Image 1: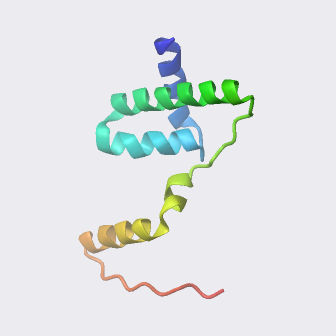
Image 2: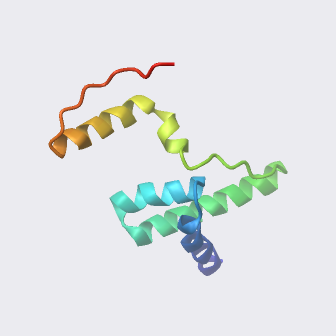
Length: 96
C-alpha cells in the first residue's frame, strides 16, 4: 500500500492548482522532496479514510488554500522577500 500511495503522491505535484500540489510545494521547500512525498501520501490516506467512513465525496480546496488561510502573514512574507532582494516596498490598498 505504501508503494501505491507514494506513486500517487509523486503524481500529485504535477497537477495544477490543487491542494495536494500546494501541500507538496510547501513541504518540499522546508523538508525536502522525499519527506514531502511521504507527507502527501499520508494526507491522501487520511483523505481516503475519512471519505469512506463519512460517505462523502472529495472536495478540492484549491491551490491557494494555504495562502487564503492567513493573508496577513503571506503579505508580510512577500514584503520581506522583496526587501531582501533590494526593493523598497510601500503597500497601498487596491482601488475597488
